[in-house]
Image (tube, rainbow, N blue to C red; front, side, top):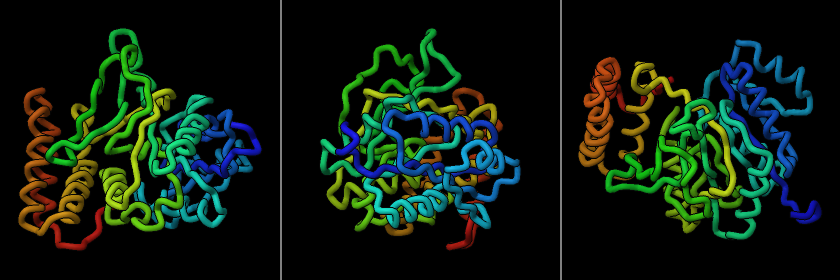
Amino acid sequence: MKPADQPRVSVVIPAYQGGRELLQAVGSALGSRLRPEEVIVVDNGSDDGSIEALSERFPDVRVLRNGCNLGFGGACNRGLALARRLEHRFTLLLNQDASLDPDTLGSMVELACRQSRAAAIGCLTLSSHARSRGQPRLLYNGSWRRWLPTWQRLPGLSGSASAVDRQPRQVHYVWGHAMLLRLEALSEPGPFDPGFFMYYEDLDLCWRLQQAGWEIWCDSRVVVWHRQSDPARAEGSCPRRWRMKAASSRHFYRKRHRALPADALWLLHNLRELMPLVLAGHWAAVGHIARATLGELNRPAGSGLT
């Protein structure tokens, strides 16, 4: 893409206690061959010194500091609102524990320019530390809905990246760790729903964009590296993360169905979460998700979860 033809592009990184990983994520964005016009870090109240270190190392990066933790979607929404005021055409959302290859941003923007109805674009995602059969481990190469829409079909998940399909394709979901958004597409469905503090807000946004007539794509020609440390899972199970997942998955179904059918689907979702944990003997996680489910059933409607 010639510089004269380059659309206005920004990168938004939601941050919380980001440490050195935040510096690496920002550095990878600034090191893109298609250099973003702005890198915007939206901090959710970090007190680990990461924002001070960021401002010292990258003084030109814009930092928006929230007075409290707004969650993933809330932080992204602040950055997206600024990008729209600056009249940017595309914004890449990037996790603080993810990093871009130099060609990734340019390739995603080129695909967005070529596919005029593409509202959200992801890319091939590989684990930055885990390996499968000597090759980087695949985390994402497109996601499709199953009959239970929060349970996704993810071809090749956790396998070796050596034999994956590297062609761009339409998908159902792009995950928020590396999501390029066409800002004009957000006019009708709006940005992230603040009712999701964490988890499933990206699936909800993709669903709403498709309902508004837009397309979702995965650019598998290029890579983002993701540490993918999710303490909600398996050996490192974290009760708080399971509570957030329970609240967000229930909110997802209640947005689309009446209360009783929504809760029936939500309980099926939780059962499907439990099954592989039981089979693998991850009993701490089994206990955490069971308690999270019961706690969510007893939580007053409309009460916040942070």
